Image (cartoon, rainbow, N blue to C red):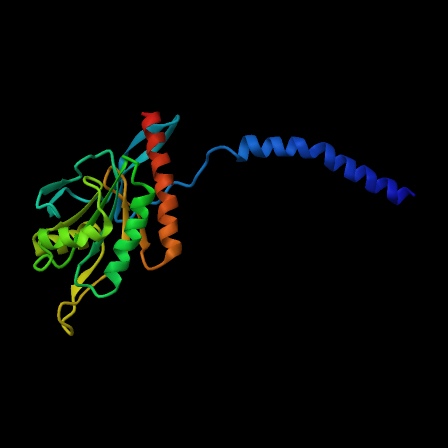
Length: 232
């Protein structure tokens, strides 16, 4: 009898404390909290500080993608970034690539469709085979993806400048394969930049889980930018 009564007391205590526990979790743990995305590339911590929410934080100089100009599928010379308030997803590809590059841009197209109405985003596909991939060739190629003007650009330009841009700014290697004709080795990455042109993520387009993570982390970065605007 005593054992039965003790169980009843324990159950009753749990029932009484559960609402308070749920309220606490909703109020404290249910707030819009997220883990900020990392910033890729070399960085330097300076001796100066800034104040954020009452705390003194060391200033850090992060790697950024420098300004550049390339020619798009409409044969227009476009400066990057055309709008410094936008998030950008970038991929390197070429039209003669037999399998991988088609997959890169198909995955890019999926992300574009999800964010096609969001004015905070722009998408760039940069060819690593500019001698073949002229603006006319890119125009034909881009029709498969029903590209929206000013949303998704396919770029060509000077080969040396593009290879330098890939290696030094986007921190990805591009190499010509000397063992096969018209084969260029490059990583099938979708690269996420914030409005300050800092690299915030690399996502392997061959891996569905990583593409899904890109879709989610774009939302995180949008929230981060909105918070930054609010804090200014």
